[in-house]
Length: 385
Image 1: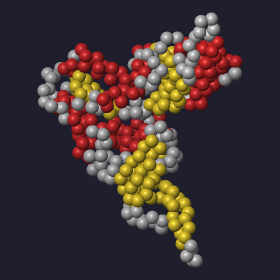
Image 2: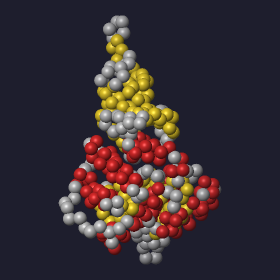
Image 3: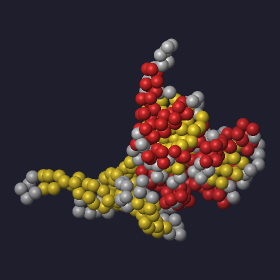
């Protein structure tokens, strides 16, 4: 994301002009947008024209509109963002108050104005515009006949390819059918890696499986790379790292990312940090439950007691359309930061973020134990946006 202009007043009202440069920037923009904001961008509008003879025709024209945002639709797989709202500035093509949907485009600037830019929004802009955040990881989780190729970016986990192939069992006296099917499977996974991984950006490719599937696949991969002279694989051989996983399904990704060997190699990535924080929370919950709280009411009480060392919170909670509810989470984050605590905002599109959402979306590791709070839990934190 490129920041073109930022103009925010002392009362936190103001506007920013941004240019999304890659698909992930659409996810950041989705998290910045809220109902009631004003969005200005170039867009295509279908316009009806009437000729002097009375015949009616239609044409598509490019125009710049400012919308009052009403609905926001994000497609996480295609990374497409559509924003629907009413026009705030009349022009020759669109009347005041008319509905329009803007589809935000890569490398085309937009201006977002808010009445209140809070600390979460400003952090999101800093994160999106920080080039150092792009320490990306790719992972292939596999078992015989099934492989999932996933890209792990600082903000989201994207399934890029799924390879499924039926592998016949070994028969007594003949393994040829089994071996031929395995070879076809490995070939399909290799092609998926070449097609979907940008080796200029990706720092590490994790290959995980139960048993020896990963070892057999890597042997095949580089044997074929030499035979077919696939330079891109041979040049990036040091980036491949073999790890154990219990299956080839996507949920095994969390298991891979929490492997100590992987954590040390990926120490500079946000995704690994999130997984580590969640692991620490679960360990604390098991061994010292009085130092591990979850649910917004309990976590707020711990914050009031200045007891929070690390706050774990899902970005899903900041997309709540009720302003009072969103403000409650922003206040919680600001309070923890002001009192010297660490705040980890989890992406709901990461495996670790999905797990945190199951714990109401907010949890905390405390500096010191607090006796169990018997008050009933406020369940507003689990509301969907």
